[in-house]
Length: 360
Image (tube, rainbow, N blue to C red; front, side, top):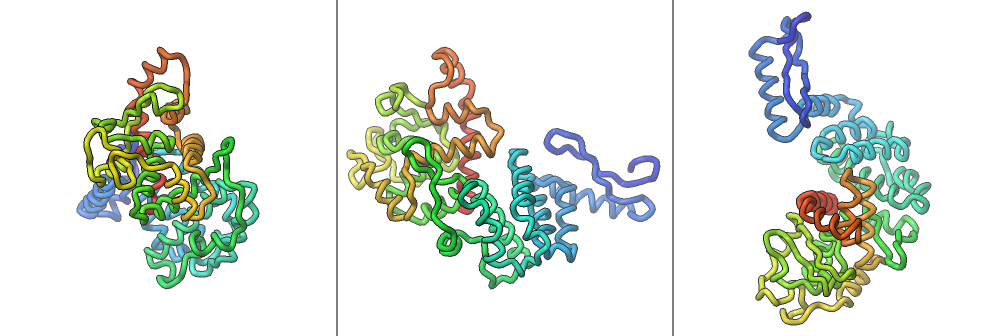
């Protein structure tokens, strides 16, 4: 109980900082009721949620005004942002919706139509492709969450859905590119990875691994079982563009992917076309991408990774450069950094895997 006005207070730590949550005045809330409220707050902490944020979210959803897109969007962001490691990511969710989707704010959730979503996206679709893709995905996610909460008709289609809906209504646009390597905007990767997951072919598994590791196709298609040990994949120098061995700390998702494959001898290829002694051809990846009707190259996913790391994370730039096996600094500094940064790079790759697996 705090002094002065005699109020019950729950004190806890969140992200290393001391926080206080008021439980009500002592005259209005009994000791037993205060203990019940404190117990609920501890349950939120155990679930990885900030008790104050969780309470505000519950109140917002209970508010009749939560049926508008703007009010529910804020409630939804507040309910999930505790799981986002990156402060920049939190800020960008709110600012992108405020800047580009303000016309949806006062609309009833059930009133939002495809035309409303198109009116948001069309002004930025060609000039700001990354922003447009992120905004579309965020609108789709908010409307899906509202539907799950019963705030939107369960039989209603999502007007922000991409595949089979907006992809045939919006014009084709030039893909982001680095040199001659066409790349998919990283905001479209969660949907792409979901589609890739539904394909059982070995080429699809190889492409998933390539994207998860931000690697070149030759590095992945030449990978042998003996190169993976202790959660680390060591690519020999003869397969690296720079001629030096490259260590790749594998994300949990990448490890799960290879664990699901039939393990061969140390010299066997991980990704093969039926004979473990022969690697899969580069053409298999190109044909897969063609069948999926995406105008990108396998190499372009490295650009998608780099753009995501720069725009959406607080990870040091040199970590993503190391992940891409780009030369940074002197040989002595590189050797020191490889040992120093391996676990930080693993966290970077786990964050990347979590981002692109959002809908899986």
